[in-house]
Amino acid sequence: MYAEYLTLLLVLILSFVGHNMTVVYAAIIVLILKAGGQIFGFNEALTYMGSHGLNLGIIVLTAAVLVPIADGTVTILDMINSFRTPIGIVAVTAGLLAAMAGGVGVPLMQSNPHVIPALIVGTMAGVFFFNGIAVGPLIAAGFTYFIMMIFSHFQ
Image (cartoon, rainbow, N blue to C red; front, side):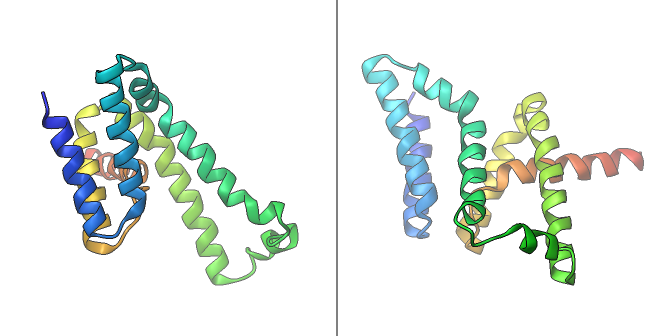
């Protein structure tokens, strides 16, 4: 019954020790939603976060990425010029591949929920041991999809 709390507390402690405050805040939010649902009987908040949190997070992340356009730091000319340097072309390509990976990652997680714990473990390991950022499960699901498609062609 309390295994979920212990697991979330472990994630919280490891994230705090690893100085990854993003995961600390996320774990606190989920713990509050979990406890609030059990104490006050409003489990809908946790359910809502589970079903809509990814889309809300993507919206906030995309809005943050668009701020440099809004404040004039990045202009349309800068965007056009990004195609004129090798690093710009690589960055555009990487962005394209990441978007494609995310696009197939969501359906993979929906159709194969058993892969989610492995994605979480891999992402948390990347955060703890390689100073990564916990945006990995979505892209990792996309990479998983691509790798599985490659393997399926050789069978």
